[in-house]
Amino acid sequence: MRRSTLRAAAALGAGAVLLATAACAPPEREQDAASSDAAAATSAEDLGGMDALVEAAEAEGELNVIALPPDWANYGAIIEAFEAEYDITVNSDQPDAASQDEIDTAKRLAGGDRAPDVFDLGQAVALANTDMFAPYQVATWDTIPDAFKEPTGLWVNDYGGNMSIGYDSAKVPAPTAVADLLEPEYRGAVALNGDPTQAGAAFAGVVMASLGSGGSADDLAPGVELFRQLKAAGNFLPVDPTPATIASGQTPVVIDWDYLNAAQTAQLPTWEVVVPAGAVTASYYHQAINADAPHPAAARLWQEFLFSDEGQNLWLAGGARPVRAEAMVEAGTIDEEAWSALPAVEGEPVLLTPEQSDAGAQQLASTWAQAVS
Image 1: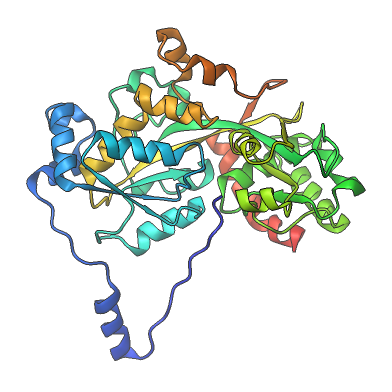
Image 2: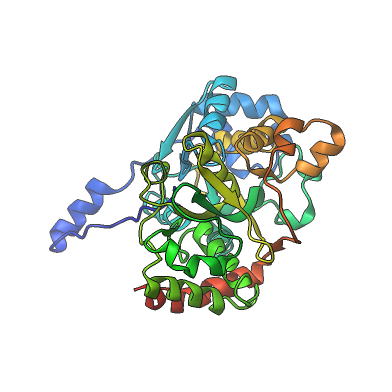
């Protein structure tokens, strides 16, 4: 689960700075005509159609992705399927990184062959960095609801879910509301997936806590206060949860997306998942192309694959809700068994607007560290 941070080293002395810059700078890359055309393409039609896009992408031969854990929303199977369908090698960097790490890495490696070609970001980080994205509209563009895409294709929501509480029923009682986690039975047990100032899942966890504590999407202070109380009571566990910590019992309660929590039942039969009534927090991740992508054709082909029926059903197989689900249900192309197996939700989900997300990110930037330190 996305959790790592990046560190930069400094060179000493004026001469050392120049030498270090020359030695450590990303290698210059050369693009052929097809890749250069792809870098400006806003649709496959700009390149002459899907066959031309596939040809240009396979000529590049590689795709750089970042922050895509294999067990996150079925990304392992998605990458394997993409490689099997096309003659393209997927280079997966920092699979456990947070959304902000994706942006930081792209800036650090800008101009080099190792920079990420595509991003998969939480809303707050995505909306703060749209100047780094290249507009692109996939072939299935018209079946993606308008509310889930930037009009020119700078970003498009790809998959989502609802925030949930996963818990080991053999170790702790079943919670029905976020306030239940303040009870003594949860001492040293409650983990949040990441830092909410950097990771989308953790940010949504605070939103859920706020909704369940009398707050709203416009005011996350009650959610921050709940975590402050969890910390004071000794219930908040400052450990980023992983499948390993869940299996070992180190993190018996995890606040995370329902599709990630539900996936843990395969390795821990006593693991249960609940979406608290009255605090249903929905969110979709943002897919975007790096405007400085070293493999611009492969980046665009990746988008075409993700938003195809095949790609959307692969996310669904991982328990995530694909953004094109309604259109696919209507067209009869959705995986009915996987669709019907999604966790039940009681109440109307709250989906933050871009303005609410931005305001919430600013609020957490100034209050979160003090609350849980």
